[in-house]
Length: 139
Image (cartoon, rainbow, N blue to C red; front, side, top):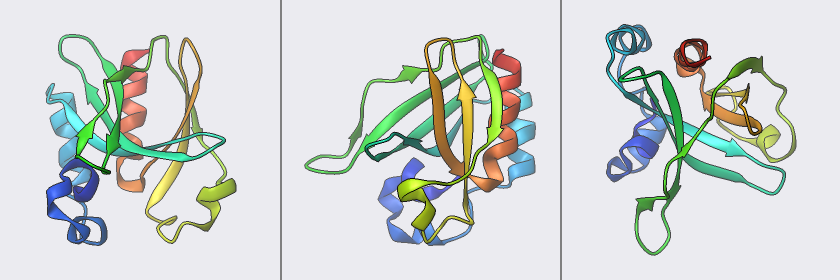
């Protein structure tokens, strides 16, 4: 998980520093029922929205996305759940604004089909397997 989005008070050091935690340990924690926060950009046709994805198995498997706001005052919008049944479509090609990202090797674009719509998210490459497991449990 990337520090600057999940823990923004760390500043730019969190963006370009090492991932927060070990991906294998994150998978073990998730299997044990610990809710985890993942940096996630929601990709739309108009813009890329920075936020976080919360994956949890307690009390039921769920994925919830929240948009992060930095201007004026830091905070998060109301949580937006990804409604089951969820289907893992998998990695997708980068296109549009995401194609030119400097950190494109760090983020992977994934597609998750929810009950109400398809979600295109850019998540850290080290967390793709964690999101895949969360979708598998929630579906």
